[in-house]
Length: 130
Image (cartoon, rainbow, N blue to C red; front, side, top):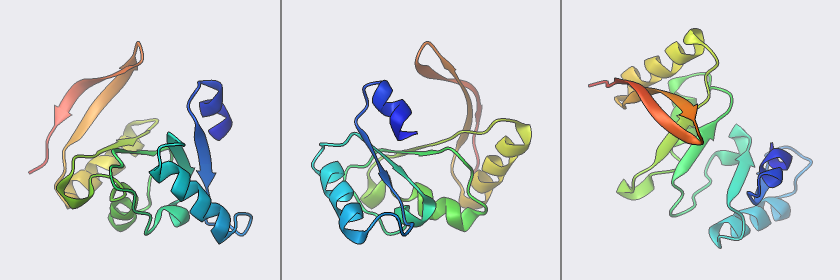
């Protein structure tokens, strides 16, 4: 994923909780991201836990969390302290979309069906939860 982002001109780095990345390497990625020298961090769920970057505005889930608790841990990286944040979930079918819809219902957040057209996300169907 990092290589594909770099090909598109987006400065990105990997943040992994695996043994292949030391704590020093993870701290360096976090520092560069906070300083704005990296525009995007591709992270595992494990590495994202406890990761706090003031001003982080977006989280993109390429694979869906397994339950609402994991969803909160992932999506809670953005929009902290009352600031706005956007979470984008890449779901490849109605079954996966249903998972996100259930998280929205359980956690009381809006879920929107969107499509990517001309480089923009367009809301196709607004499905709000109460």
